[in-house]
Image 1 (spheres, rainbow, N blue to C red):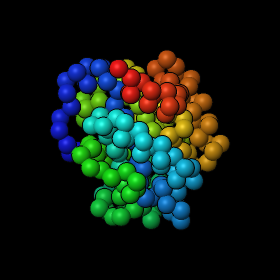
Image 2: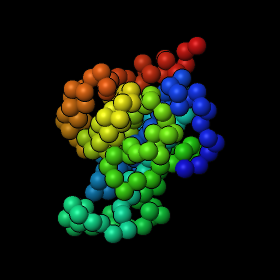
Image 3: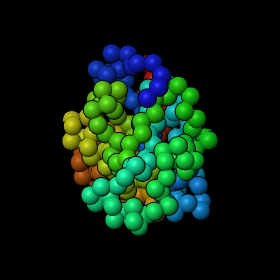
Image 4: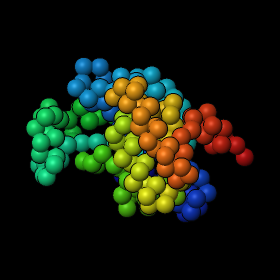
Length: 194
């Protein structure tokens, strides 16, 4: 992670944090085996959110482990193209979302929620990114289970397909009021408010 430490009031719930899940070349560029077709369409919305949230943004990256273990062994047998180092260009963030001073969270798991991310963002979390039906879903459920207020921005997430995106949103909506499905406009109005 990089950048300045968060203000204590932010962690105490004074302001929501935006966590942008895995907006990376491997998911955002056509031709990749893991391309999320809706990713290019949400890029402008996600970029607008990042700008609005200022220094309360964490950008996540999914990378392959050095050596898969357990159930990851057959997973990476199926997706062997991804067994490249974390420095490989496929794991780069999309150019529309430069890291700048934002915190970068790199994990080898679908869920990005852990003690480190929890200590950064506190108890009010806004999620955007890809894919709705995998890493967004996994992160939302883990954070909600930890007692965090989670808002998923339906128009700032993309799935492997539109049907999978909608199914994942419907599954997360079952966790209300722990997880709320909302829009970027609704959250941007709150962030821009007094």
